[in-house]
Length: 204
Image (cartoon, rainbow, N blue to C red):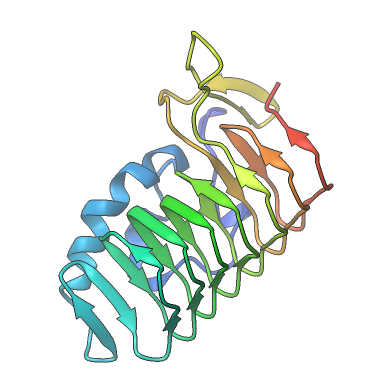
């Protein structure tokens, strides 16, 4: 294995069955693949899902009024999406995941039993199982403030360019992200990481 590659199994115990073919991909390539792959997976879902166009919601999931879901999206069993949440650009929500009121999720994979409390933004990211985001914490996916938009990550102790200008973070299973914390583009958090409230995480 190259020093510039990472293994997703080091971050996640249970990769979603529907998306198993992504498990050997480099993580920064996954968000841009989600629209195509989710649209394909929707075609094979059973009648356990209510499917309208390219939005598939499991019949045990609950979506409150005024949430906006722009497909392709798969919302798995037992999940909850709060009022005024906004999901777009290819989103997969694992079983019993929670997207609280006022959250935005864009081109991201969120695994089982993870929760965004409220007023969170997660963009172009992969979030593991049993992860909790307190209110207002975000994953930034683009360096708007820089002339050079290059995103770097720390891979095996080496700072590398990941070759894309939009990528948020990998957040390993059981991690805890405190209120109003910011994960900068390219952040890699190992399982059981804790980010303090108001903390800024950068891959310097």
